[in-house]
Image (cartoon, rainbow, N blue to C red):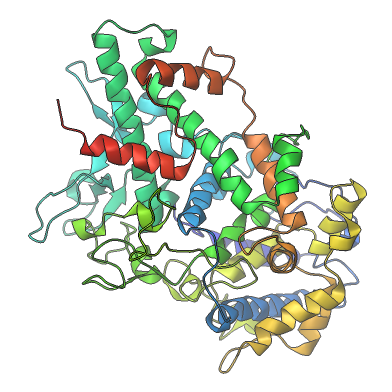
Length: 554
């Protein structure tokens, strides 16, 4: 399922639900009940709380104008390049897909159903379930048959094509033609991504990231099989080479997130709180994180990228526009799949290489702030049609910012001020770091003054309302802009929510019969590669895979 599928139906049900007579029930709206809030908030802590001074339709209008302004602001800021290498934007997206998948939302008006029927269908651990699915037994279509017994263990990978349309290099995700042989219509030229989580085919950068981890698995699997065949195996997990490879890949991924990704995103003192000083995380993904805080990466996405030798500013194809990268989702019949081999990504343009080349500058993420680039509103993959049942939204061009803000309203997220108050009460936030009303007014006005000609941006009455009841998504982005130690870091509130969520998901609960995933992976990797350590940064993983591909085939 692609991002946002089902949103319109959930929103319509939400409108029907809130139109009914009040029952005193304060459960979240349909589809959001399984995620629990981190704190026990007061009834006045929500955007649509009674006594807020605005009707629901007024609030929806304010959110639509705020969403519009967030996209407009991205066109007008003075600089669009920050310090964070651009690949980490998509590594974060990949990891959050591994943590949160709300396709389990069920649309219902019965608020009395058990919480367990709703919400997140992912495991509460960063375990690459979004890549491995149910493994060869539970998700056999993801894996190749590797011997005469029809044993499956290697990830399927797809070929890109040369200029004549012939298979060229095996550097794409596997894609299944949706034609009559697979139950489709004659002449249906679409391709269905063969992935455990098809959100990882949303754009060509994240699908290439999935390919990188699949190739890493296949390399480790082949090494393990050869090692066993040579009679050299000692570690008991090598009795099942698939599980040995998966153990190493998962541990590598988790170490990269903990030691390479998170220090670039969360404030150093907050990282230390959870990963050095032993603060105990909650053990679950919270409502605030799932529906708002973990979506901060949307503000890091760029309009375009130098993608490869061909698709770059100096290449024959020019820079890769974001809209173009979104076109490669296989169920959109654009003719872009199978993918041409000129689209093999050059990871040295996205993650800082060991030897930088001044002639090939690194893509950088956008500085964190309350602005999202235009394609995240205008591309068919992100565009949202205003519901006809809300005349106040007629004529708006709505996209990803609107979807996030509306989900926060439907899911009854607390305001940013309420979340900050609770963190202060827990001793996790310095009161001096809470964004005051003046700072929020300035952030809300900054987007409006960036230029809203021909757009429907915030009005003065919207600003007055939102400065007191700030949507959590906007708050964490404005806070990052005001208090982040660098343009890539979240502020103190956003950092704590993100670090706590990742700390929960990175607890080492073991692997199979092994008490420690990290210890088992280290022992396995040392046995298979005695001369190499486990790659614990993205540049190290990329260098390892590049060396493997360059090595002569025995």
